[in-house]
Amino acid sequence: MRKVRVGVIGVGGIGSVHLENIALNEQAEIVAVCDISEDQAIFVGKKYHVPSYTDVDKMLEENTIDALFICVPPFAHGNIEEKAAAKGIHLMVEKPVGLDLETVKKKYEVIKGSGIICATGYCLRYLDTIAKAKEFLQDKEIAMVNGYYLTKFVPIPWYRERSKSGGQLVEQATHTLDLIRYLTGDMDKIYANMNLLVTKDIPNIDIPDVTSVNFTLKNGAVGHLSCSFIQPDHRMGIEILGKDFRVAVDGSNVTITDNYSTVIYRPTMNYYVAQDHAFIKAIVTNQPNLILSSYENGVQTLTATLAANKSQETGAPIDLSDYYASL
Image (cartoon, rainbow, N blue to C red):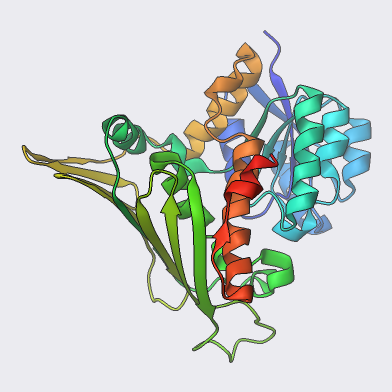
């Protein structure tokens, strides 16, 4: 069986992780890499013995590519997805899928119309521990959710500019918000408070360093998500409460407590590897259902985070039902 020929755009950071996973996958082969940094592109190209590019169009023109990993910053997508979809190239698009809702909705229509398989990088969904949590919650009535993403500042220049990253909620804590959606269902209304308080000394920063988001789920449950980058360490988690039960996600671990027992599940796998292998297998077997986060899901999670930003601007709750109805 012919291997899936893979190209990667953006080969630093998360792109390098995807490259390592693809290199280990017997059903895939790396055929080309592209990066805005010529030195980085050349270095990675030599590492994997493939041609390197700084021009996306040239890479797509000169190589036969079956699957493309798009690992660029949120502001830098341009029309890469549309060009790849027009060529029938399957896509793995890193989160967030963009910064402008109307733009990503148009991309979604192009992707949907092309018939390609498209995944988005919400890797936590692939954890075996999260599978345990989702199975337990399947028939449970959820009453309250509390999530948090508390970490250090990321010293990448574009991260600190809202026009380029969307802010921490859109770019980082999107993982926690997406996991809340995956385990508890869609949000109904969202209201946010954000501020830049104690990191004003960072040059060119205009994103909030503390964020508090209140939301309701469609079933009436209430929830909260906090995020900040003013901490000396990293903590991410979610607590999901119902009558006589609690599901707690602490990083990659999951603890399930009810009237009878407390059980702790620890991961036995690498969720990045599981995500990338599921994407390749979906292409090989033509089973899109192996993808746990489609492009549509990426748009839906982006919708919620952008709505939180909008709530901060207007000082009013945002009704998400109209947003999701248009997808």
